[in-house]
Image (cartoon, rainbow over all chains, first blue to last red):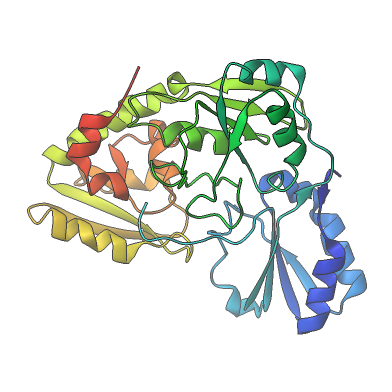
Length: 88
Length: 242
């Protein structure tokens, strides 16, 4: 694995905020590593972890409608903060 | 609901290949950009270029958080917020989505600056030119002409919070009071859905701007971006196609 998934940081953040239901969202290139991420979350936190099946175009593309599943944290990999500007 | 972003930085060292350096040595000033996985690992690349006598410049483009980082949506002239004019661009990363933003943002430039691409994983390098987006820009030109001449316009608005531009889209109505605008909402834009609305003459995308560029060839009707719709005649007169 040539990319740093920072699983220690992810686990520490989940435990710090006591997230109960975590959604992991990955761009296509990182989707094959979902198992490693979910296994780490399940073994080192008390959260349930879900995988977003669909697209992940960037930090501009956070899934909607997660309240019905009581998702309290989205961990999106492969992007950093997006600075939204009016128009494009 | 909280959000944690993990940018998945590349862990290995990045060094330009001899071929990449050969492609760059004829340029005096090179603008360096990378995707976020690689943007913090390019100091060695800067040193390699400077050792060749090449001046390295860069910026923090409009929608990014870091210097050297490029996003696919910063594909309009001025988005890079560069203070200096380079002779060429160098993009470090895998895939062509991001470096094509560096080509598309030159669609109105009278002098095209080549985009050298170096993939640190495969070590392959290539050069992108205006011809790489020629088909897209030909369709785009035709779409701009349709937008100017037609009256019934469908405005695509995504519900994705990061891409939703409804307020900005309203400025179209003020700019073109004689056109009829219809607002279409969706999360992901499904192009086959357009066929259900045959009364629309031309689409204006206010969602990801790469839809109206890269994906336009898969869309039957004309489609342009909001920014360009707001200055359609100006863009049409300045658009450069080989």
